[in-house]
Image (tube, rainbow, N blue to C red):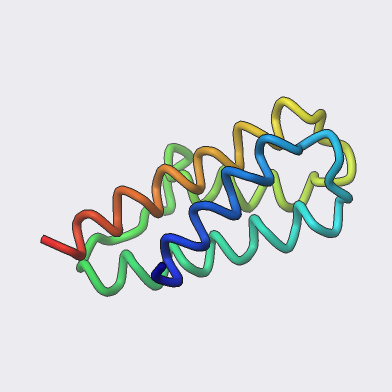
Length: 94
């Protein structure tokens, strides 16, 4: 299993257990996802965006608010991160 696949699996597993994650774990997962997405975007040549619609900005906000996010929002943020990483993985493999 590649590191990227393992990362995706970890994010999905964590999303399924969102109500049991500590704020520290949420921040760690989201910050690692942000770094992974940025690295993968750089490898693919897909630019990030400084606009409000960029998923990285949403993930940064979620990481900053991890202490107060409800489990449903944590789950959604983790699944969004997994989806973007999966999509970028597909693009890199082509």
